[in-house]
Amino acid sequence: MTSARPQAQPAVGQTAPDFSLPSTSGTPMTLSSWRGRKNVLLAFFPLAFTSVCSREMCEFYEDIDQFAAAETEVFGISVDSSPTHREFQFKNGIRTEMLSDFKREVSRRYGVLDEENFFSHRSYFLIDKAGVLRWMHVEADDGQMREVRDILEQIRKLA
Image 1: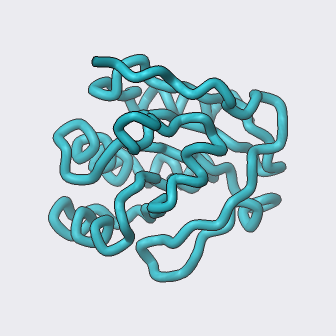
Image 2: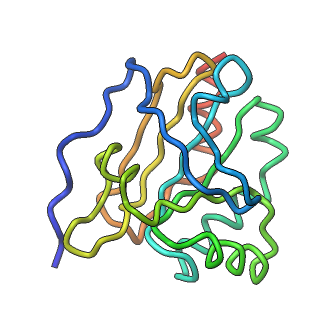
């Protein structure tokens, strides 16, 4: 059964909703702290340790140099706890930061929480250095994911 998608997503061209979430580094990450410094890609994923999520987060890490060259910081976000994210990173050899939306507040603010199953839909939000949402994509099927090259193409459009 497919659950209904939330309706209230931020609009492209508007300032991205700010938030602060615990990160795997042990310090909170506040979105607005990146303004004027780097672009930010928020990659919401359903749950750690699932096959598509593992492949997706590993691919982000494998291509992290391309994101860095494009002055873009990548954050995976799920409803998993920070300790779960750290174990997920360890088992998959991933060093990119992950953010825990354990209370589901940010997933709701971005309109991607599956209220029936209580996890985030796979989705991507690209925020420029000014803090403005420039591109977003929510997968119609959580078993699908964007190719890294497609996301990098969206980042190149920011230049």
